[in-house]
Amino acid sequence: MSFLGYIRSDDSVGTRNHVLVIPQGIIAKSVCDFVTGTKTLFTVDHGSGRTANDREQIARVLIGLGRNPNVASVIVHAASPGVGYPELYAERLVDEISAGGKRVELLDPAKDGGTYGAITKGIRLARRMVHEASKLRREKVGDDHLCIGVKCGYSDTTSGIAGNPAVGYLYDKIVAGGGTAMFGETTEIIGAEQALARRAATPEVAGKILRAVALREDRAKATGQDIRTVNPVPSNIKGGISSLEEKSLGAIHKAGSAPIRDVLRYAERPTGKGLYFVDNWMGHLSIFAGYAAAGANVVLFQLGGGGVAGRTLLEGSPSVVAPFLWATANPKTYAAATDSIDFYSGTVIEGSETPEEAGERLYRTVIDVASGTLTRSETLYYTEPVDMYLEEPRF
Amino acid sequence: MQPKRALIMHPHDNVATAVEEIGTGETVAVPLAGNALTLTAAEAIPFGFKLALREIPRGEIIRKYGETIGRATTVIAKGAMVHIHNLEGTRARGDLERGYGR
Image (tube, rainbow over all chains, first blue to last red; front, top):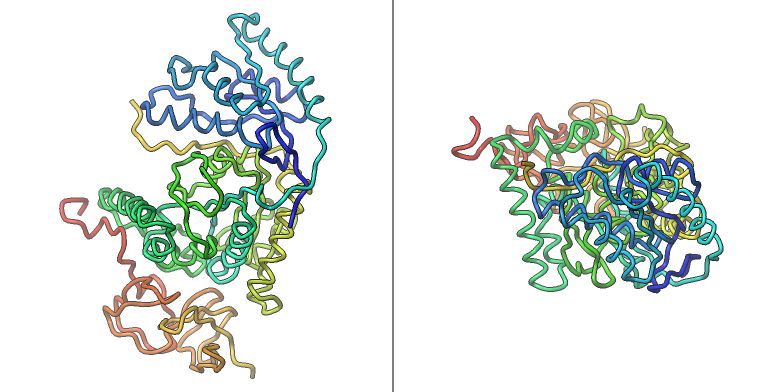
């Protein structure tokens, strides 16, 4: 199978054609408010007071978003608060993003007439870059250029028995087609790690999966609290999930059945194709920016329902440059938020479709979105802020 | 009256998941290897919640997807609901660690 995408100079393929302005701040925001076709991220983390490891993680997010195939070209600006750290020097971001041959422009308020001058120059540049990007045409490419990231959330029993199995079918199909698929949420594989370790491509990868879980479980125990007061979250329990293990065992169905090639850090790019486990955190404000920074050109939120059935509008989530799909198998969630949901697999519970049939329909939905059909959330301006996953204390 | 439906995820499971609202005393049919296991709901089981397929003694492992999802904190009658009031998770239990909390 194939989709229609934008072929980039490094042979990666985009499903969108954005001009990205980074990092966050008044310069990026002002340029993006003024010029259509642009994207930036909104986050409070500038690296100030963060450890070197966490600053490197922030740099990985920014560089990764810039390198994402959905980005045609990038404007990087200097002099955001906290830029004193070498990991986040604007010149470094420019060098690493442009290494793949992508056009990257630098705004430096010190040389460009201060903040006002940098904004003016940025608007002028961004208009030209957006216009230039629009000359590129979509071309037919193979599924091996798909790179997807998924999370399941507000999980309930419909997630484990229908929603996640449909995603699992999609994942197997993408991997079989030579593409790349990422899943993660380390806390939510506690209790299911042996089942995943058995699917590791090598004993080393199995060891990495088990170590990631052991580290996370030790941290949970070190709080002295029952994990059940944290996770499963109240909406999970209201939806019928009784323990973290039960949640985990349902959650891993979204990863299908392919071998797990490796374990990645947050925002780390896979080195090859296939299925990857990402040692990340479940928060949807965090995880999707991480997938996009790792190169995902489409991302998917498989939604349960439970406590959110009263929500009739689901906001766009901060995947920044990757089109974001909402999927659910919960009939109540779908009925409440039909306008916001891209894919419904409650048919499996109702008995009108098998998980495979629903999964095939989900695959076609993803191909359509990859080829240019907007996701429901893409019809909104509003997106939530990015909560970068940083693991070390602040000083 | 049509029996109500609940799904078993693996032949080794001792619980099934209700995929419709089940009332007290109603007959529940659980498809299993081409046949249907039939039992009576001992209490109301809401959509998405679990019921015991047989009596589960206190302390016994509760299985779904063929894997451990927790332990029975009390004896659970056949057809009764299985949830946080009678099932406890066994993983990441910081509250059970010596030297932390409590």
